Length: 91
Image (cartoon, rainbow, N blue to C red; front, top):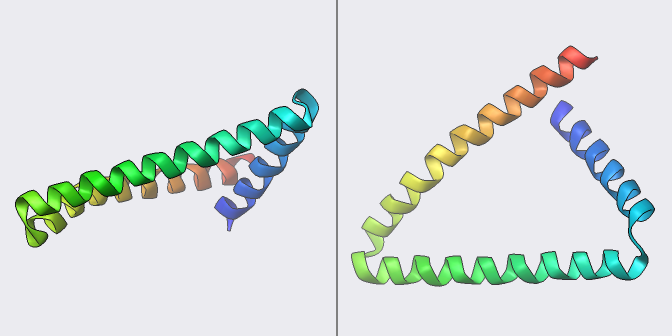
């Protein structure tokens, strides 16, 4: 719950700051660039993953993916807990 609350507050504050400091055209350009860059990066990641799976096989490709995803999941859980502790100490 605290994470959802901080996310909502962060999005609201970010939107307010962007509206204050950037024009409509600049905000639209930034949003468009971020969307475009994320699509390109995702496409490159999928192509790289496909090439990896073609080279080493499906089972080994899944193992490599798991080795990459599991540590990221632990870091994410750690950050969530840290944020929740921070939110509790601030309230």
